[in-house]
Amino acid sequence: MAHTVAWFMVLLGLGHMAYGLRKYRAPLRAAWAGGYIGQFAATEERRTAFWFMIFSPLLVLAGHAALHAAEVGDLALLTILGGYLLLTGVLGAAAFPKSPFWAALPAGPLLIAVGRGWL
Image 1 (cartoon, rainbow, N blue to C red):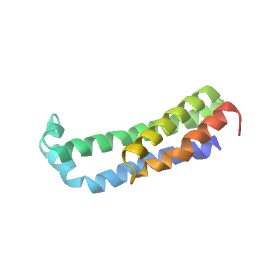
Image 2 (image 1 turned 90 degrees about the vertical axis):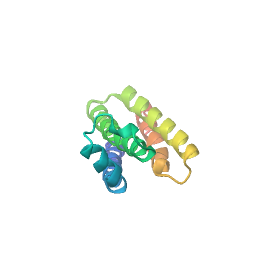
Image 3 (image 1 turned 180 degrees about the vertical axis):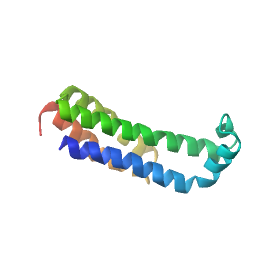
Image 4 (image 1 turned 135 degrees about the vertical axis):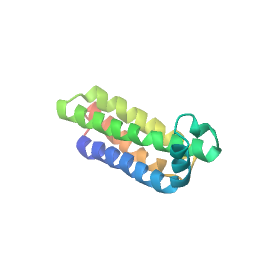
């Protein structure tokens, strides 16, 4: 179960990245063309693009950490990752009800359950 949830997190991060590259193509290109450094403060759209995109590798990282924890049997790390994922999902879905934050809500408790030995 932990492997499935971990791979879901990796795929969610990659999907987040692909969606962001498509949705924020113009502001990302403009920031890149401007030399990248210091370019994301220029407009609200660029700031949004940056924060959206920077979340993608963090999701992938969390997924890889969960994969590692599942491989070595680190139940404490699975519990911690599940807690962070659940908290992020709850806060994100509450702040933006019409968003994909809802995808984190089942994944977080599943990692917690595996980490606690309930599954």
